[in-house]
Image (cartoon, helix red, strand yellow):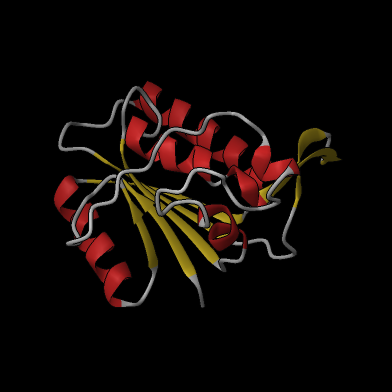
Length: 164
């Protein structure tokens, strides 16, 4: 089982810094499935697209992902096509790969989670899951210490770990 992780917890020795998506659409038309920015994250879309499980571990900021996680998630856009399709009455990107990975989100914070922010996070995650063709979406709210343990366990189990 291939697990692809996006996290803002920099807990491994190698700390690559992902550049922002330029919005050039080259990953759709010039280098299908591969980002043209050569910074170690160019294959993230293909790796996410071929995963059995996608895990995001993010500090909750204003009800959504941290800017660091969003930066990597944007770079994974090559996992889908530029074309759109209607699924269950909603428009989404057409899938580039045949699999439909499970989607696990761990929002972490040491503050008390606010119900309004949690509702924003749920809406965001469900829209991402629909757009990217993910199934079996699970959202958890944890303390920072628990998020670190989850990340360490995923690395130990051999997950492909993208950190920023």
